[in-house]
Every structure is written in structure tokens, then in C-alpha cells.
Image (cartoon, rainbow, N blue to C red; front, side):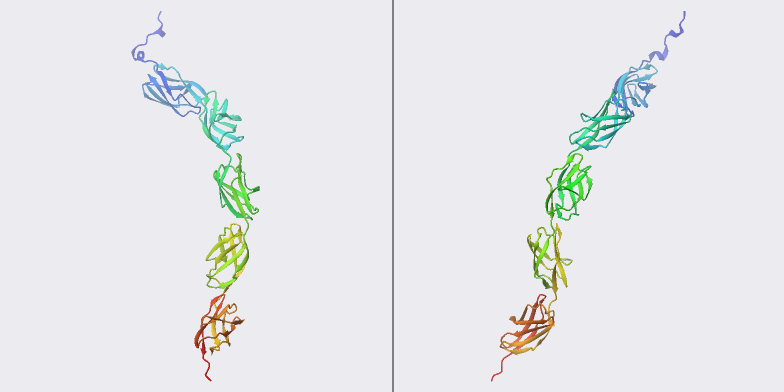
Length: 433
């Protein structure tokens, strides 16, 4: 009896052998697929299919009779057999393992005590048996879907750890989560300010992300802004004179109380000596009061002193700038600006007449000087010799000429505003009898 179905294979068909797969690299990948795997073996010429389990590769390329590259299709976590089919048949299977894949972690940082919730995005999460932060299991986790898990972060040391998901198919890639340690304040700028507060202080340090409080002693900052993990600006609240510790609080704790801010009381002026001087300035005044340490400015009205020297917390000297009229003197420190004490600019005196303009060589001749700005007269001189005088008004001074040799001498008046121009007084010898 003839059995056609058992007819022997003849011709080129008899020469074809089933392909053999001996190497697969990589041997695992994400459940989402999309990565490229390389198969090594023999008999790949004319391959018509590459399958991962029962699912065809997304695409494949026969590089040679011994090599194929294939784009892995999506699959469920776990192992599948990868096979190659040619006209000679289908190869043996070689194991490829689908593992879960984590692509997104939000938020990607949090406090060292943990307790916050993060969301993992990716694929292949169905049936997840573990979520780990480094080597520490999440406090709890919920598989929302094949592409999302929420997890409660366990406590951990400051620094980065890899977050992974484990399913029956294996353990995913790791995505970085950073534990943020207790904040540290290292620098304050400025480190002092007025008791009234209201000024802005910049804090520099580490671990400021998510700050919930900034305090000056036990008093909360009026407001604060977290500029970065290393910098905060804060508006200082009012406080009593003296030092207070500045601290920052985050979910990881409160910084150490070892960085101090000094509240400085505003300076107080109680005395000025002298209280008047020339409009040209250049003279020195002595200021007395309290709180002069750290003085940053001395002003006469709105004009800064030419220079100043702080002698102590209660005394300083200042060189008067040019000016006019009566102006308040103020002192400014980190604690604020003082009360003002009045200083009068006095114009230089002028002399317009001297009556009489001559007299005897002996003392006792009464003379009237006429001019301007004579109210603050402090001296009248005849050729440099002081004379007694009386201020009658801002325009008149009477004086008694001192004794001296015959001849002309210059008469001058000195006031708080300076020394006047000169007028000539002539002494004549007494006539011989």
C-alpha cells in the first residue's frame, strides 16, 4: 500500500535544518519592551519569525546566518522562550525574562524620617511583591495599576537610594530617591539688625527644601522664602537687644541652635560739642550718647560727615562737611538711626567799618566795629593782640583797643563761622607838651 504522506523529502528541502539559538543578550528587559536583543546561533538565514513566547518580535533583522537582532515586544513579567523560525523549522527556546520597569518617581526626595507617600510610574507592576528603598522595604505600597504604584517611604539615612519594584518576573531597574537630612544653618548675612526687625536676612546652609519654619529665638520670622536647598531669605521679626539663635525646621527636623543673630538697639545722641561751626565745614565735633558701636554713618542733615571715628560705644568724633543753616546730626548703626541733635552752620563774619579808625598808643580807646554775622564773636584782635569786646548785635561789636606801638595794625573779628576780613586801626603817638 502506498502512503503518500510518507514520501521522502528530496531536493533542496532535504538540506534545510532547523535553526539553533545558543545566546541571547540581554536575557532580560522591561515589561514594556522596546529594547533590542541580540540572538546568536546557527541556521538563521531566511528567518521568517522571531517570537518571545507566543508574541512576535516588534521587528527583527537577520544580520547573518549566526546572528539576529530583534526589538523586544511588550510582555508580562516573567520568563518566556525566545525562538527563531526559518523554512527549516523552529529553533529551540532560550529564556528571556520580562521584569517590571520604573520610569518615574514623584516626589524624588523627602525627609529622613520617611512617612511620606511617593508615586512610581512604569510598567509591569501587576502582582508586585515588594517595593524597596535601597535595601529597606517600603512601609506599605499599593498597586494602583500595571503602570502605577504608590508607596509610603520608610525611614532612611540622608543621601540617595535606588527604588525598585519586584514581581514574579524579577526586580526592576532602580530609580533614585534622595533622603534629605536635618537642615543645617552655617551663615547669616547680615548677622545683626535693629530691634524693630523688618530687615531681610539671608541664611546659607543645607537641607532647606520644604522648610516649614524659620525662627529667631522663639519668634517666627515675619516671612521667609526658600530659594534653594542651600539658601533661604527671611524677614527678621522684632526682638529685644542681644543674641538669638536662628533655626530652620523641615520635615527632617530642626537645625542646631548654634548660629546667632544679634538684635542691636538704635543709637541715642545726648550731646554735641561744639553745636555750631563754619559753613565751609572742616572742623571736628564730638558726639556723646549710647549704642555707637558699629556706626556706619554720621550725617549733618542729609550730608555725610567728611569722616568719623568711633572712640567708644558712647563717644565719636566727626569732621563736619560744608553746609548751611541749622541741621540735625544723626548716627546710624545696624540698630537703626539715632535721634537728631541740632548743629548750626554759621557764615563767616565781615567787617565794614571801624570807628574811630585811629587812636593813641596807650590802651583804653573805645571803638565800634560794624559788619555782619557778629553774634557769635569769640575774639577781637588788633595786630594779633586780643582786645576786650562786647557783642551789641549781629552787626555791631564794641571793643577797647589795647596799647601798642604807633602805626597801623589789622583788626579782625573771629566767630563760630571763622575769621573776618581785616580793617586798619592806626595808633598815633601822644603830642609833646
